[in-house]
Image (cartoon, rainbow, N blue to C red; front, side, top):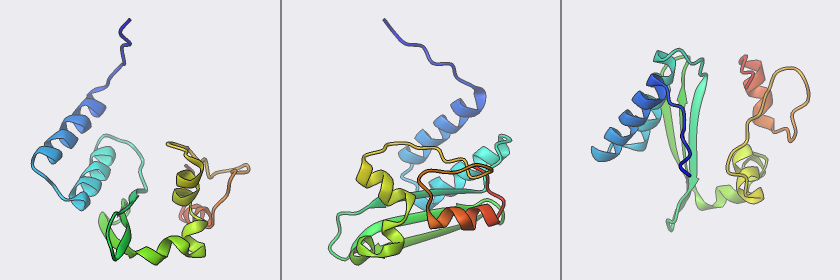
Length: 131
């Protein structure tokens, strides 16, 4: 039996745009920024888009790309291999998801307890982020 998925023009448009970026070999920064802009243009309230991942590289251990929706800026950092042993990294949602094998988790940051809680959540709450 084939499972049908409902689609929307917004998601179809963003999906097509992502495929085009892959075909033209866009940079990770262009994709993250363009995706964030596309969500905002479609009416989705987005504060930031963050993409991170571990690297197989002799010097760099991770890549961190963050798009800030308030001022439409992109920040990309290649993190040294040692970053994965730091307290900041080990107290991050990324490290938690990676070590617990969690492919996706949504955190609501508004009223009520968030479990687990991470230091970055306090900064995001102070910026008015709720999800």
